[in-house]
Image (cartoon, rainbow, N blue to C red; front, side, top):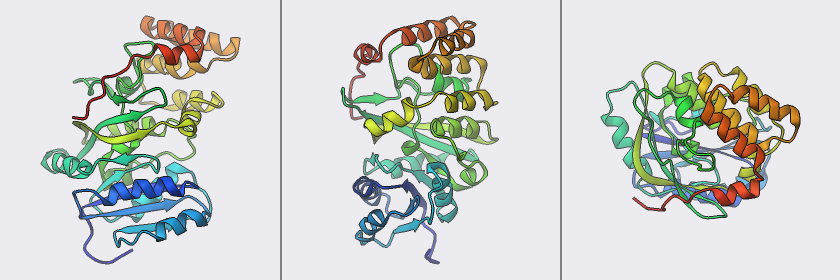
Length: 306
């Protein structure tokens, strides 16, 4: 890394085997109206094609760290934070994009804050095969826990009510050093970090209530977040001490019930949600309704570019 004056903001992007996507992400970072930045891309394991694609970008603000072995997205992100030099870290997933004023808007909010650790987020345009939506539909309420904001729903089928995604996050680097991303999680990394970080003294989440991120939900991302074995999800929710009982019930309703494929799992969902009537109702709707119908029943958010 350069020994010159540190930039204001370091952008950290973990990637693996997606050269065209990460080049697009890097391009939107380098095109920010806030120019005093560096972009740290961590290539998670041997990947000559991605390294070559990044080397073709002739911008001195871009730095590439190619790891000799894969460590997973969370640890790659942590390594990027350790290598970064900026006072603030902006996280970007390799398949997402930013609008040009994303960093400047969030930097303005962060520097005006009197908090020790202002975490600034924003709204996104969720690009889905069935149509684009704007998420979240509401900010966190006064006194509402982060776990309940992220996990509880008012509707069986609506998505994006309470939503914070990695590519929206603008965070003091010190906070990410003290509260790193948890390694070894195959899913729920965003939720896990937000819930743990929100419990750290001096942290408060603040919004720029505009759409500043394009969040691409392709078949790969959907398969990682919504498919696969249930055991990692159950293990995560069981071991997270900062998740409230209400949020835990809604997690079983929205994350486990929708992938319920055995009678044993169905009764587990019943036991975990029955004490919270709305969560129980959502669980039964999602467990007993085919996923193709669930997709058709989701209401569309009005797409507005604020």
